[in-house]
Length: 188
Image 1 (cartoon, rainbow, N blue to C red):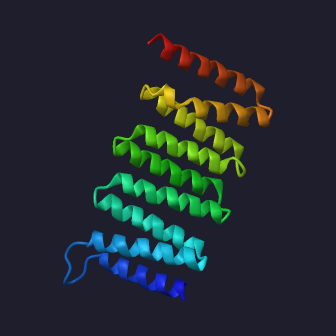
Image 2: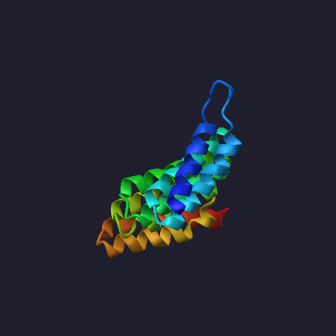
């Protein structure tokens, strides 16, 4: 029942987001509301693949409306749905990276780095290499923006992950980087 309702909502939203003989420009506001409702219906029905696609389309609608922050939120939700589906690490990583880029576009680099940390956390049980990559990218963003004081959890988690996977050389390098980052912060 909820799945068929979701299908109808997506069909309606697709028609709102396209041009027609009588509509010369897409109505992204109406399409956005319909995509969001459809995603919720799909989640209720347990159709996670369709929910993921609906959240992705809602993110596109938010981008078209000029709201990268909200688009990133929808992409993060799509990534979490993909994780619930036991989706591949590549897909989850892609959603979180796109969300990070949109947060950066919105001028929220710290939130983008936090999103990459959440990606690392989501990817830990699936693909430890991808998780380490996400934490490293988050640390680079924190350092580039001069916000090392927000990075201590990401450093700690990355070091723990590297030690747990017997990557002692990488863990030592990360620990040295951690010490240098916070030594700079205390000097300033």
